[in-house]
Length: 119
Length: 215
Image (cartoon, rainbow over all chains, first blue to last red; front, side, top):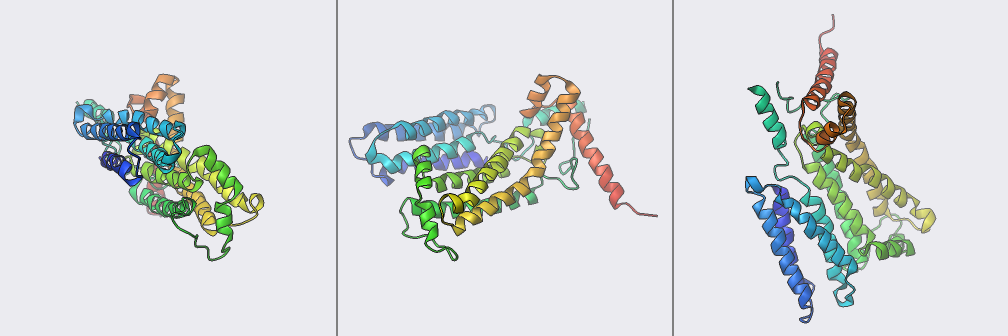
């Protein structure tokens, strides 16, 4: 569960990044990208709390790769630190998104296995 | 079939390498390294003017501003200290995830943790200790993080070793890649259960005979 909470916090950080790194008004694409990406990260983290969708956090891997690629490929010099922010966020998200939602417990297949063999 | 006890001791150790006390030690040590690396990263971002160094004084800044450091930064697009901080943070994240039975129920996590700690730790420690010959200057905090990398390897290798033994035995007993693959990803099977149970029982028997009364 804690990994999903941190993902949500990273989404909040990404949402306020345009203000922290003072994006110029004409960098509309980056404003939209940051907002859209943060909504997606928060959404996938949030729905992972619902048991049937608990693996949806893996979709955040896509967001992580997107952020890293954006940080590497974008050439806007006025966004120098913002691009580094994308890379750092992307790597963090990459590590968090693979952590299972029920990481502190035994995996569900093993729990089911033991229940099944008891009968 | 009975579940393996939560604190079962796997071969070849006399303790459970996945126990929380050991993993929280790793978290604590890696967190210290993360903070040190972030501090050096703040200097490389020029958010602070100097770097504290009680032994080599200005040499720390020479190391952090060296051509080698700039070259690495141009490759990875972020300061090398920040990449180091992320690697140590990865150690923290992977040490916190999983139960005390993760050596057999989530081997992928333990192997990933091992990859983050052991090869990366060896490479970073080697680079750090070579800085005197390559850059011609020494950085006290970099050396501290290098020592921490080696300490982390010491704390982490036992759990990785148990998972490797477990996976190897599952592979040998089943002779099927699919069973090995499923076990690696934390999917149970009778063979995986048997191997894990034997590893735990053998160890527990040995521990019991060691601590038993002597006549």
